[in-house]
Length: 304
Image (cartoon, helix red, strand yellow):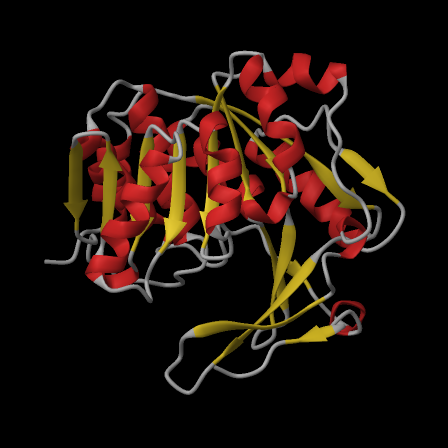
């Protein structure tokens, strides 16, 4: 039975407001079919969803360009209510990813501008940044943020740290970072059930307290020492699945902050991920893309 957007929002309203800061990656997702660009990127999305879906205190730290797309991203953070005190503005193009419709109507990434201004710069955290991060209960980042050298410093200052490994982190990165991460997220849609179990077990062994593997239409599984749980998806009238994984992450973290057990965290996460599917783009807020966006299609991805 399909769940309505209103029912999803009402379910999430019962979860206490979290405190979270996203650190690192951000992009404009440019939809080629309707020539609109939407704010996105894992670290930025999780901060935005924390504010939009749960009303939590949220911040974002990252590098954005000084072009009109960077302006739009900055203004969107203000509209959503995500603090941007420690955002860096750098001369040049903001990161952009380009999305097209395939023959089945599904969206796929076809090109990028190689990260824009973020391509040649790594976010380095100064003392003022660490002081800022310490004002939030949780810090979230991703494999796309190149923050691995900073993770120990964040964790040593007492902040809970979550990390999205996606499907792009090899076992060496997991082993090197696991001791600093209390919740790790992985994308495992292409894995068999046995491979998912192996991944979850290995990630827990690396030191991560809670490990979550999302499996697309197969739902998700979570692992802790001595415990594991699975959950299916929430059937909704989907508008756009882009950002659903980031919303899933946000829901899991919000429920964990509220004291839910592993099953409860997965239940809220599935609800939050489903709600994102009712929104165009990751969470809305489009801007006209135009020729200046298309001119930045510097790297093209082969068809699957």
